[in-house]
Length: 90
Image (cartoon, rainbow, N blue to C red):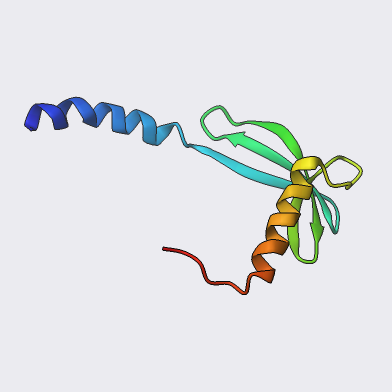
């Protein structure tokens, strides 16, 4: 058991460090923002997309603020969850 822990500890450290990315936003308008992924180690950021706000929730959009296919699906899922009356879970 001790050997297993000694071998797995370095892997756990490496995998825990691989999640050191953050998301940052630049607001273009009140209801439109750019989404950036930031690599904290290198200090670099990459534009990964846009989001638009509809009724207080953010959905994927193009640079003009129009919902993408993914954004439309996100909105449909949010609407379906709100119309279910909550609940669910385990």
